[in-house]
Length: 438
Ligand SMILES: Cc1cc2nc3c(=O)[nH]c(=O)nc-3n(C[C@H](O)[C@H](O)[C@H](O)COP(=O)(O)O)c2cc1C
Image (cartoon, rainbow, N blue to C red; front, top):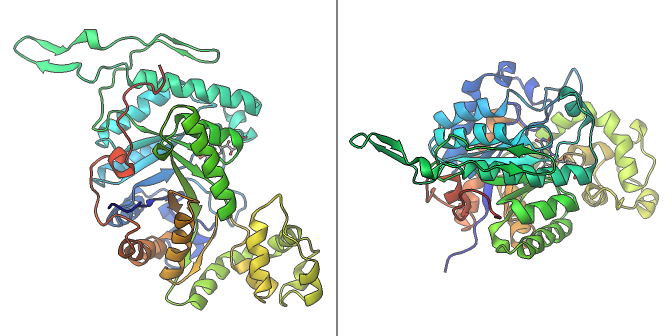
């Protein structure tokens, strides 16, 4: 009997790692930010680990928050993915392109071209960008959520219609009869929605996997509904197993309501690990990366657990009186983990060193600790897989691939080898060519 296997992805993001201070590590070359050769090295390490794909976010605006932080993103993702595709053979690439700002024809053309060039290893992460600085870069205002989700639904349908407009068997290339294509199999789509329109056809032939797979990123109810209807994978942000189980179940219900097999949509959660040979070394490593932000984070930690905390509280554990009144903040689920760590008796500074205020759960410890975290979520049906961003890539990417992945493989939780060649194969997604709904 085949065991359910997890899917794994990573993000090279800015070339440095998930910590905004990764670039300051003595071993890191700050030029890696835009040095595609460094990116190729990381992509090859990820491929050595048989990961499903490398994820590219795209926020369409300046991403650097402080002079001491590196930006959180790098060059334009389609350009980077093209370079990385040529430096690898199996690993996939999931590229974010905003449905809020980009036109269906451009999205369809760039991503299907990339899918052809990469040999069928591309996914489109369709997002509903809502950031005012991104809107300003397109000379627009931010539109309300309802409109953004109605728009993305249409954009996805238009893009997929364009992808299917060049028939799968249209390319004859018969020199004898002088027929390059069968033009009867290449037809306009004449898509006309309330927001976008495109005629087509799109002159890009099928890729090895037909067309890119569909991804969506988000965590709200609209995202879960959209993923159920359109996505092959949902890439999300969630901090507790309970919340993840609830969200995954809602997404699966939405898939069933749309007439799809719920198993066809994979729910992928983030993990930002720090690993070392001992738990203490791993905590020291992460602590060093968190330390510059501790003075700001301490106030926020106080809000998370219902206490007034400031810099004067940093070097002592919470007192029994403080612990007696501390409460997790229901509006921010990171607070449960923060409180759990505080109750273990660490100083407030050490609580922060556990990266309790970060973008994703941050298991810290020996490789087994990272694998245990992932297995716990996976076995609890809280995730179908993970996108893993190490704290500092320079050694963290290999530490994950050579330290954590073998443990997952030994436990039968992750593949030993790629079984297929395309991203669709890696993710176990049925063939789709053209729109899902007609
Ligand atoms: C894990 C994750 C990754 C995301 N990546 C991007 C991205 O790369 N670019 C982007 O514009 N938005 C990104 N988003 C934002 C969402 O598309 C969405 O705009 C945001 O979550 C706001 O939610 P709303 O659209 O439901 O209001 C991401 C969201 C999550 C949870």
